[in-house]
Amino acid sequence: MKYTPFLLTLALAATLPIVTLAADGQRQAEVAARGKEVMPFNLMATTHIFTKTAEGGAQRVVAKNAADAEQVTLVREHLHEIQQQFLQGDFSGPAHIHGQDMPGLDTLRSAKPGQMAIDYREVDGGAELTFRTSDPVLVGALHQWFDAQLFDHGPDAMEGHPHHPGAMPQN
Image (cartoon, rainbow, N blue to C red; front, side, top):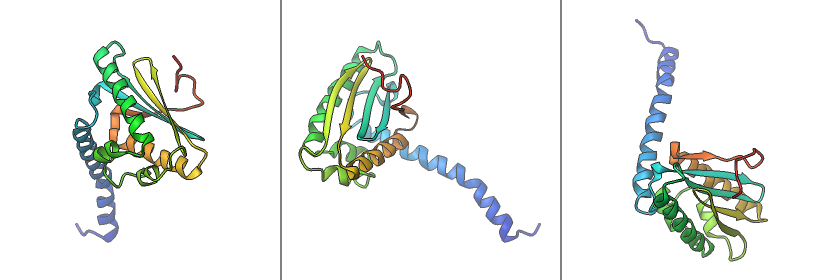
């Protein structure tokens, strides 16, 4: 059989999704391994929910089993701690987990004190950080940062929807 450039291109294109999925899986495994060095809770026992808003967004982490008191406590302690770090411009935890070139990270690091509010609150089964800013550049950086985390955490993360009932439930 003679292989034409078209057939070779078609055969190569057919393998791209498999290669991409393998690369995605490898990246997610690497992130999960580094995550254990920063996050005290079990990544596979929790879900990260990232909800974008016009003013920034919310990062919620909840135990998949809300009755798992240990995971809930670890999530709450960690999110409260990183809230304090983020308010000081310290994004070293996400940089260690996701890499120094994580989308949006440089812009978030450059935010001036008071330019972004980060509020912590406990929710059923975990905790949530809400990021608010009037600076459209920072909003864009937060959205890029959320997207990178959604990709990197794979099946242990999901996108929330601010206008969908239940996406950001109140206690």
